[in-house]
Structure formats: structure tokens, C-alpha cells
Image (cartoon, rainbow, N blue to C red; front, side, top):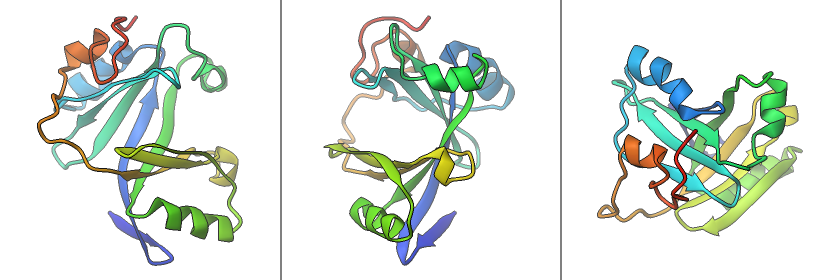
Length: 170
């Protein structure tokens, strides 16, 4: 679904679900609901999480997330969900992150986590207090090398995905 934010192109991309272990999410999102891992995923060692995406027959996607060993990234989220996890955020792609930030700020929204450090993925967040209890991620994807290897599900869970730390999932 394509939307507009004051003339800016906005496209819903995925829902992210977090749990202490991605392996705990697979029986539902892969086995029961039919999600397929098309390759890809890995670690964000700076923030402290591992992620991969499943896609469905209609093209929709669910991102599965877990904390890396020793990470505190999800601590407050897991505290709120009594350790179970759940929907972590909704992701929308924009074609111009600077314009999106300017338009949202002009409308009075407080943004946080602006990150432009990777040309492949630039992002900003609307805090759940700004979005009726939902964390909203706005991202501007950048160029990807089509020849870049896309790790298998097993490789990601073994810590050998993109930027993998070599430590297997719990």
C-alpha cells in the first residue's frame, strides 16, 4: 500500500516481531503461517540484535528479531511484554528521509534515533507516545549489491549472517 505524507511517497514494508529467541517465533510465523525465508538477515552488533525476514505469498513481510548475547537492546520492551516479546515496530519506507523528518517535525512530532550511518539503510523513529502506543520506523533503503551473498536461515541463526558475530542464537 502506498500512502503520502504531504506529497512524500510512503510504502508500508513490514511488521517486526521480537522475542528472546527467533527460534521461538519460527513455529508460528514460518511453519504455521507459511512464511518463507528468502535469504538475508544478520546482526546489528552496535545496537545488539539479530534479525531476518520472512515473506508470504501476497508479498507481505514479517521481520523476526532477537537480542544478541549480553545486549540490553530489548530489556525495556521485554519488561513491558513480561518477557514474551511481540510486535516491536512497523516499518514504512520513504523515498526521502530528510523530507519525511522535516514534514513530521513541522507537524509537531518528536522523532528519535535518526541514523544516517549506513547508505544501505537510513532511519528515524516515531516514539510509541507519538503514535498511539506503536513504534514507527521510517526508513530510506539505499543501493544494494545484487551479487551480495544472502545467508540462509541456518547461517543467520548460527551468527554467520550479515555482520554476524559468530555466536549462535540461544
